[in-house]
Image 1 (cartoon, rainbow, N blue to C red):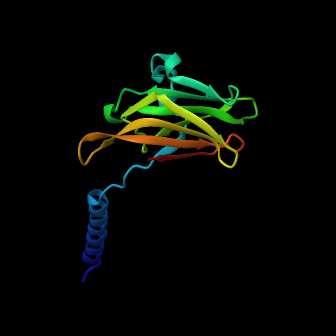
Image 2: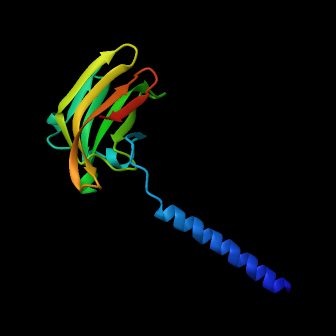
Image 3: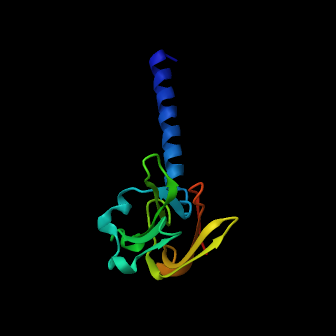
Length: 163
């Protein structure tokens, strides 16, 4: 076999393997979105604060913690996020800024900020619960759920889960 034919065969095999890997990744089922807490990005912009502001924002811990409902409009099936401004403070006195979402940059399909409830457990920190809706792609429905997230003001850790 000539060197040209050998190189051609190697290139074909390499291209074929690359094609198989690409197909496997493309056709594999996507994992379900998990709720996530992310540093503030475009979702946390002031123009996304849900109106009326006075009904969609609240403070806790003597004003050190602020939660606000965000409505990014799109995607329509996942436009709602929760903004969390909280300790710890940075070196110039600013609070951390986080958003709570469904996952993958997608929010909840609905959120009832009036159901926001807060409690405190010294072993966990602040505990927030709120009624939300999530889009179920299998059924095409919007399913009710309870969003529960915790905030440790000393460390800034926010844990989140959907019930």
